[in-house]
Length: 386
Image (cartoon, rainbow, N blue to C red; front, side, top):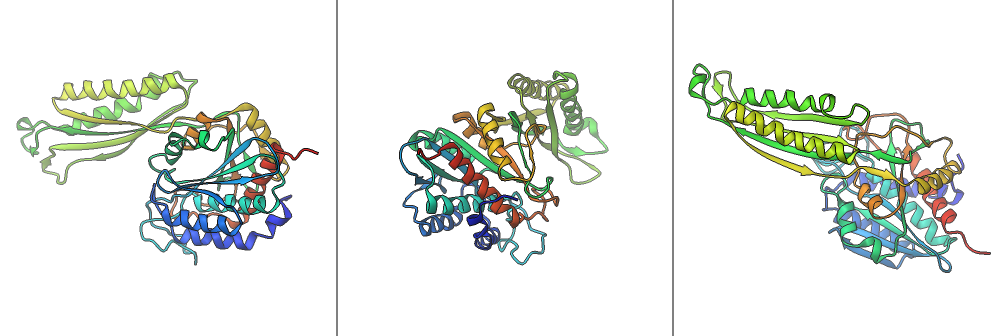
């Protein structure tokens, strides 16, 4: 496939970077060692404008091209997941309970590869802003970086990102105009009744029947309250209560997630959650403490920038899919796309275990492809004037 020859020369070096990152995963905003590794590589490349400590451990580095031009933002996320690794790889995580199960080690490596090439050649006008972001998997490091003003501070006019995809053949790139990933909202609920002996339910206030009624009602919201032509997912993912067959528990804890694209559908689902919990709690005589947590907005690709990104990808990838179905997963790059126009693309790494699976591992063969895409995107968007 037509990757940049010079970047192909980096393949072994990129593999070394990626496997170091894989062995040393960090979580949420606490990506200080990862950021330190990134900064050390950037300095080796001769990049001098490096801004650290954004969103605690985020990094923005600026590469100046030749002459005036716009500033393109290229983003990579750096954080891992709180889970044990089962790949059996020689480069497996050395930190118990943490692993790079979503490919962020690969994303960081691809952007480092692009950074090395762009700093060597500077075959573009304007500037490039390299955005290394923490906390994609948790509280939204992308949101925090936007709130801390990176778009205005560095004059970023458009922003782009890649995410590895283990359901696509190696090198295939895929995207779509408009919504590509969903909004996500989470909730936690504690129902409190009066516990006691299971032989005497009349002396108790049992929260279990209330939990069952709430669960059944919530799962009916997509099919009975939402427009059937608009996507909505309500998943009840945790139900915890009781410890013995002869004890009625005092409390039941429930938690779940709501995924949507349409703002009206999203608002309706939140409203129905509150109505169902309040109504069922009243009906069963239990108290309910509901914590609703609005989270990432939908990831929405801008039409013109997506067309441009697809054209660039077609010069790098063996196949480009430009009208894929949106995913109900979520991504905090959504905040950057709310702040600036841009596009989010998937990069196939060959079919294998899914992301967030303990056997997932980024395919190092994909890194030069992603780095080449980033490079061609900048050189195509910001060409030197003759």
